[in-house]
Amino acid sequence: MTPDSEAELAPMRYPERFSALPEYAFPRLRNLLDRHAPGGKVLHMSIGEPTHDAPAWIGEIIAGNLDGFRPYPNNFGTPDLLEAASGYFARRYGVSVDADRQIMALNGTREGLFNACLTLFPEQSARGRQPVVLMPNPFYQVYAAAALAVGGEPIYVPATAKSGFLPDYGALGPDILNRVEIAYICSPSNPQGAVAGRDYWASLIALGEKYDFRIFADECYADIYRDTPPPGALEVASEGGADPERVLAFHSLSKRSNLAGLRSGIAVGGPDSIARLKQLRAFAGAPLAGPLQAVAARAWADDAHVAANRALYREKYSIADQVLGDIAAYQRPEAGFFLWLAVEDGEQAALKLWRETGVRVLPGAYLSRDISGENPGKNYIRVAMVAPKQEMQRGLIQIRDCLYR
Ligand SMILES: Cc1ncc(COP(=O)(O)O)c(C=O)c1O
Image (cartoon, rainbow, N blue to C red; front, side, top):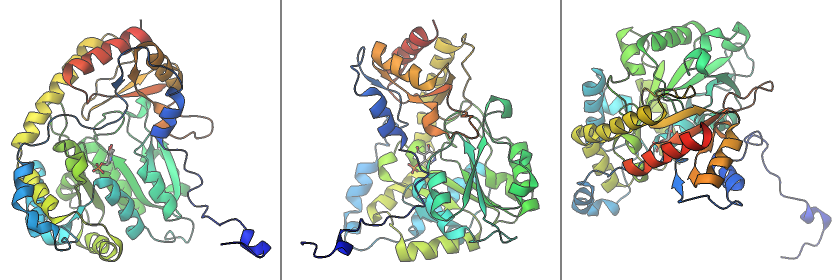
């Protein structure tokens, strides 16, 4: 089409609401490293992508449900899937959740963490001012995108060694707390592997009650831990008799079952919140294909493969303890599969490691925001313990020798 007036040459307009988002972590990492040759055999320890085997039975379940690719899938989760997820909650947390009214199937928790904000965040705070979304800093990046999508003010709250690597939302002033509508919290946390204990959850829920905000509990690493299962947000909420709408929990099969490619998670919470999620899903959602929902149902119903997976991560925790245990920078992760290692400068450390050894790790600053000149991730690297055991051990030894000796 040939433009015939100046108006037609005007540049396309784009929304400003996402302009505060930085470039995503992985393209940034490629920009940092890829113009330099690796100093040895390449080992990826930057992406948290599980590499342990997926359960052996997935092929058989897909094959047995091929007919399910023909019709449109169930938007909210098949009854089998929702019942299986409810059974998981009863076994794992002793919490009874109504499969039909309190759970919705997600296309991965990332989708749910974003869309729940879209559907539950009010346009104005109770006092008519710009509402706030709280999130830890560093954090899983979808929280910020969700806050910006709904016109909320994201407040990045440091989750540092000083605060046990979890954000201390209670230390914020009333000016912020009075405007909060949603607080994201990740436990076990990515990247630090910190676990919110019962007391932490109880005081966060009490804070939510005091200032009337919702808690979005991202618990997608809930089943990857050393010895003691991390308590769940809904477990503590229901023990304390909290309003069931106060907490929405997000769980995933990506890490629990090594099925990141399945794109399957669940949101669990109060019936009103779930009904609103379903309303958005009905208009604009992307449900999981029927045969994949059958796989998900089986995965939530079965704990044996999860225990086997956890045993492999336990071996990895031991290797990390052995290789890095005598280094001051080493924090034993309580759960999850990341190491969050203190260094002088995360970008320089990642670059040095790549150029001298071929090991790829993520600079912590790519997961965190600069607030008043302070970036709580700047002096860290994140190391994913997902590679096969021997390779992972080799990587950790190279990290130790290159960065700490
Ligand atoms: C903290 C955290 N939350 C959520 C997700 C999303 O998981 P998924 O969408 O695969 O369920 C991830 C994935 O890496 C994560 O690390």
